[in-house]
Image (cartoon, rainbow, N blue to C red; front, side, top):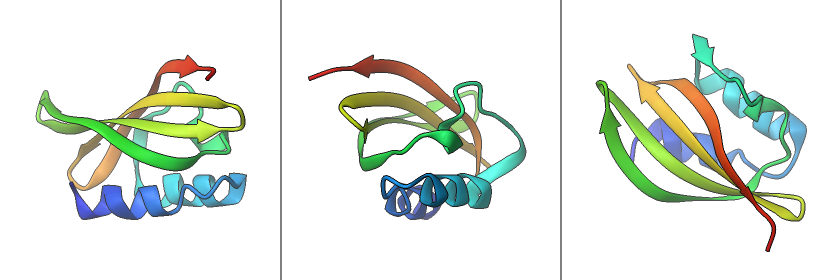
Length: 92
């Protein structure tokens, strides 16, 4: 796993400030963030899958947000987040 991804995950502490700061620190200037990951109260991140797509390293990331579980695809290019897309929301 990329060290920057590990650093990003460590900051997902369930607070809006922690998540927003982590995203701001690691996202490329023109990153695609259609689902506003930086506004979510995410915690307990866990990588489910890693794959290469179009020259990017993409992680399928499970996070908890309140009572829901969110599944994200977080892609990295040149050491920065290039996209953060919500793929699924589950309610246990």
